[in-house]
Length: 57
Image (cartoon, rainbow, N blue to C red; front, side, top):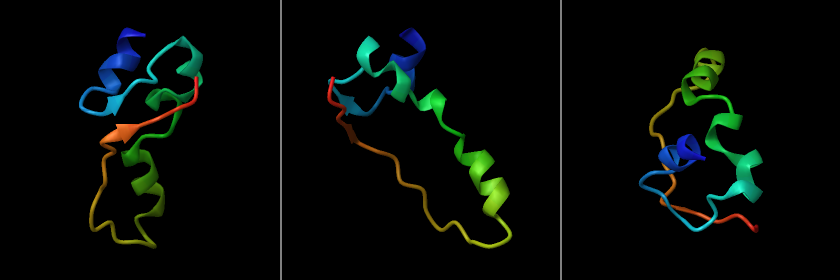
């Protein structure tokens, strides 16, 4: 939970709890991994970071 809370720092959420642990940011591929795979076919012009997060728990 400590790592989960740290990963969500700066994002308003009331959903960081054990019931949403399967949705932690670490469960997904990193932005760098994705860009490495698609770099030949796209140009990344901007990266958006969420400000608010809601999960039903």
